[in-house]
Image (cartoon, rainbow, N blue to C red; front, side, top):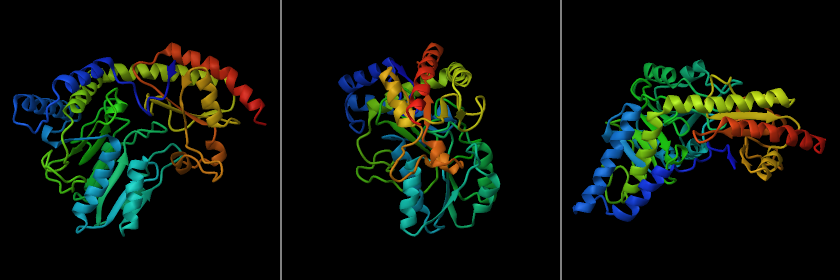
Amino acid sequence: MIYFDNAATTQTSPAVAEKLADMLCNEFANPASVSKLGLLAEKEIRKSADCLSRGIHAKPEEIYFTSGGTEGDNWAVFGTAAGYHRRGKHLITTQTEHPAVKNPMKALEEQGYEVTWLGVDEKGYVDVEELKNAIRPDTILVSIILVNNETGIIQDVQKLGSIIKEKNSAILFHVDAVQAFGKYPIDVQKMKIDMLTMSGHKIHGPKGTGMLYMKNGLHVKPLLLGGGQQKGQRAGTENAPGAAALAMAAEACFQDMDKNAAHVLQIKKALQEGIFSSIEDVRVNGDSLEKASPYVLNMTFAGVRSEVLLHALEQEDIYVSAGSACDSKKKTGSAELTAMGYSFEEIEGTIRFSFSRYNTVEEAELCVEKLKKIVPFLRKYNR
């Protein structure tokens, strides 16, 4: 099997799975319990918060454990709106955000909030001048994704954060780092980030785990109310096994970040160059090989429908994802690529390949060999 769909989810590493299983079976006590077992579980949570905070240059008490990226994004958006509505009801985001940010923003619009949707250029980058002009005295939140989940575009978050704070220091800056955490260096202080979201299953951790970094002193309201866990910000019995497994997965990424990035870049390069040298009418969506994330390669194969190509590769035991969740009846496609100026016809042949440290260059070369046969065959019958 060749698994090139790591932006969707990654396999849990064996060491992380072992850690999770051990805690589920042997250190299963409620962290709120004052028993010896409860204190051991609480200690694991503190250790995990310390690990995660060091990886982004934050403080341990600024780490809140969540169920994943969607919860973190929702919390950042809805929590800010609830906590700062008296200061203003204007928010800013981009047209290329993940639905976990987009849909809460749309929900707030229905509640009377005003959202400015920033456009992007043909490569997917935010227009700096448009951001500057969008900021107002009543703006309470700017939310911008760091690494785009479809194209791998890396926004210059440090520059954008500086612009936001220079224009209005009271604005909260939220960054969706689900595709960046553990793969790209993050410093929340230098980047002027107030809130940052990540998800465990994108970094070889278990599903249902994640983190929201929230800077000390914010008045962001909680989504969940109950027993007052996590300093009253997220009620519910804390998932100590999940937190420990999440931290172990993160630590492995932090230790080998440069090594892993160099490794997957070679895979991406072999796949991209192999496709270009052997298949006509293909295009990379986003920026160049060196500038975009090495973990994501988004390509359009003209004259081929992405769903058909995806399933043809699946028959060869190669797993990728369609670059868009197309609805042929509505003739709509990827919101990200649409915002970049591509038509539905250009988008519908798009495939996203995404990599992990467990992939190899040999897998990329084999994928190219299969594509060399599959794409011409599909084009022949798509005329």
